[in-house]
Length: 152
Image (cartoon, rainbow, N blue to C red; front, top):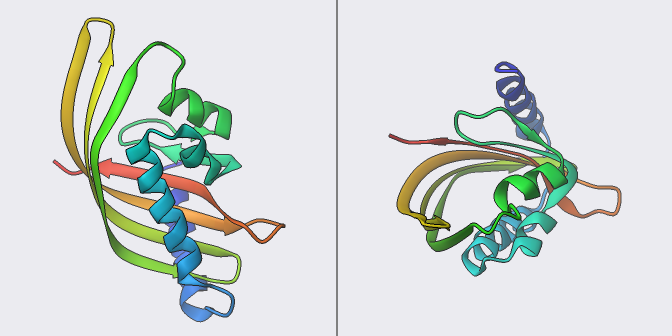
């Protein structure tokens, strides 16, 4: 599994460097903007609506979480916990694509508070993320993979 993501990115980067025929950066930038604004608004429907049903996320130091239902359970658990995003700034490092696939590399700074019962914590986290996008049969772009690592 450790080799799968780098191999996918290398394959995608090679394909993206040779063909930009149908790739429109504004499509992906709109998804990126909606992702950040959805988190800032606490809007789970917006955030989850950007992902394909078979998407995978790989949080820092964790095993992959596969499928939209599992992603929803991880990010928006139905367990009385509450996460409030105070700020989320994302810097685009690279964005490339073809007519059917794309990827973005980003650096993000997330400031949030998490509370459940008597437990509460606030944290600021800086991370690098790789997001892979695919155009579906209807012509809509969806996130199929998002992986991030915390910067120490």
